[in-house]
Length: 323
Image (cartoon, rainbow, N blue to C red; front, top):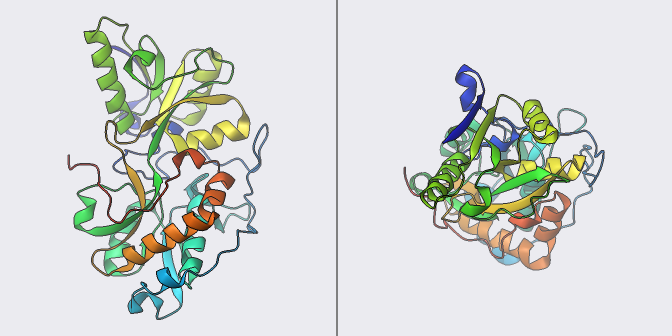
C-alpha cells in the first residue's frame, strides 16, 4: 500500500477541508477552511447578515403536530454550528450565522408557525443541549446513526455525500467505483470514514491486480490545495458540501464523483430532536411541506447543495450501524 505521510504528530486526526468529519459524526467545523468573503471565480454566495430568505407559508397540518411544550413561547430554538460554509458560517459582520442549515432552520420554523431562534453552538455541545432541553432541534450536519437513535429522534433533510474533486483542468472525469481510483494519488483525512472507504476500494483493486492508491495526508487546507494544484496529487476525497462550496467559489477544482457517506450504505443528515417528545414528527411534516412547495429546493440551490437533496423527509430513517 502506498502512503505519503505529509502530516505531523497528532495532527493526523485533523485533516484539511476534505475531513469535515466521519460520516457517523459530520462535525461541520472539524477542520473546514474559512469561508471566502465573496466569490472570486464562480458562483456568488450571499454571506451578508441580510439574507432576503425565501418566503414560507405556514403548513397547518405540520403546525398541528408541534408539541405544546415547543409551541408555548412561539419560538423554535435551533442549535447550529457556524464554522463551515456553505452549511453554516458567520456572516461578514462576524456575528450572524448564515448558510444552508440556518435557512433550513428558519424555513422549518416558519412552516410550523414559529419563529426561529438560531443559537450558535459548538458542535460537540449539541447532544447535551438537546437532552437538557436547551435546544428543541439541532440542524448542524448531524448524520443519523443507530447509536444516536437510542437517544434522539430524527427527521431527514439531506443526503450525506462524499465527493471526489480534481483540478479543474484534470483529465479525470469520473470516479464512482474502486477501479477508478487505481494508481491515483488521493488526499484524504486520516481516521475518517472516507479513508475507510478508500482503503476498502484499494484492497479490492490490489486483489484484482490493479495499481495501489497513493494515500496523501496534509495538516491544513492550504497544503492540500497546493498539492492538488501543483500536480502532486490527483484527487481529494471528503465531505461534498464544503468541497463543493470551495469548487464553486474559486473555480480551481471540479467534482468528478459522489459516494454515499455510509458506503455501501446510504446515510442521512437530519434534524435532531429530543427522544420521544414528538417534535420530530412535526419537523418531518414541515420539511415535506417545504419540499412540496419548492422552498426546500430553492434553499439547496442557493447554497450549491442540490446534489444532496432528498425527495421526502423520513422520520428516524435507517442509520449507520453501531461500530
